[in-house]
Amino acid sequence: MTDLAVSLLTLGDPATMTGGYLYHRRVADRAPRFGARVDFVSLPSWRFPLPALAGATMLRRIRAAAPDVLLVDSIVAGLAGPWLAATRGLPPIAAILHQPPGGIDHASGRQRAQASLDRAFYKRVRRMIVASEDLANTLRGQGFDPALLAVVPPGRDAAAEPVDPPGDLRQGRQVAILSVGNWMARKGLLDLLEAFSNLPPGAATLHLVGDETVEPGYAARVRARLRRPDLRDRVVTHGVVTPAEVAGFYRRADVFALASTREPYGTVYGEAMAAGLPVVGWNAGNLPHLATHGVEGLAVPPGDRVALTAALLRLATDDAYRTAMATAARRKADTFPTWDDTSRMLFTELRALAEHTTVREAQP
Image 1 (tube, helix red, strand yellow):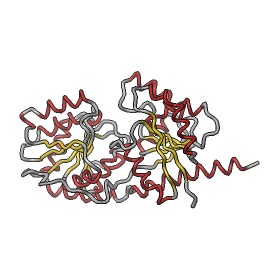
Image 2: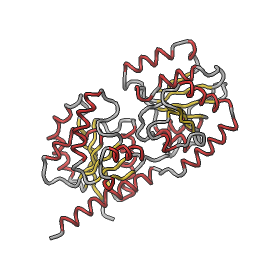
Image 3: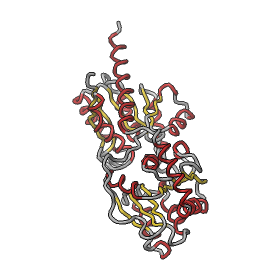
Image 4: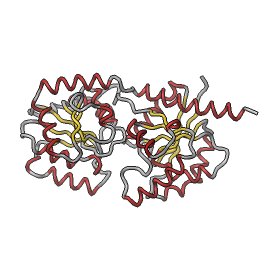
């Protein structure tokens, strides 16, 4: 098998410890196993739309890498699109989508502008690699050709060798509830804290893992909520940890909870289920595609904090129910891909695109 050279165009530091970036790093690390290599080309993470000013430098780096396929991250699709459309002699282009056109974390004006740019770019690509069935459904609903879409979800394995956290995560209470997510509004941390605060004090200890600096204003509200007496000594914050440490938290916790309203895939749900944790969240985003309500987890109506409290309470206090759901979660997660599976699917798609283009160009 000849090596497949892929240039992956993204924004900012490829080593960023969040969703799409982790996806890219994990498939890039496994690329040699599948006869491929990945070179990252990054636009600077300036304020929108300023990264587009670095387009000429981006094109020089792409040409220097001489890839067989150019894979464009959805986070830069609209920014890079005009430059790529105006440039001749580029390799075939595929997009890898972790979010719908326009993104999911922006104000309405920015979102509309970016959505228009994103859609214009996606009309020119040869393949759209999509991270979840929920996102694929969204794209089909927006009129994208289903034949262009390939769903390649992230792997379920958080790390090969987990590093366990010190001590007992329960801290003398009935269960340890884990939430992994950056402190940003769409992750719903304030909703989770309100729901958790209504549990009996001895029911659970809540552990929060994630970057606390992404949205400073929201993080300040979270810290203020944590200082109130009803949560004192019941919630432990851990900040950013390594993937191996995240895997250790999964292994030592009893329940996973994330009250996110817009999770295009929800990698952490799949990782938690693979570790045998029942998952709790809103009946929104991709969670319903991963866990069946009442079987592998509890997905309650978005915004219903009373229902969220009830779900957490049931899992904290009903050992038999929690154990049965944990077994079902692990069993369901066994049907999800590993990162090796994800990498194989991705590079198979990209190789087919490169080879199809080569054959077509060779025809008289």
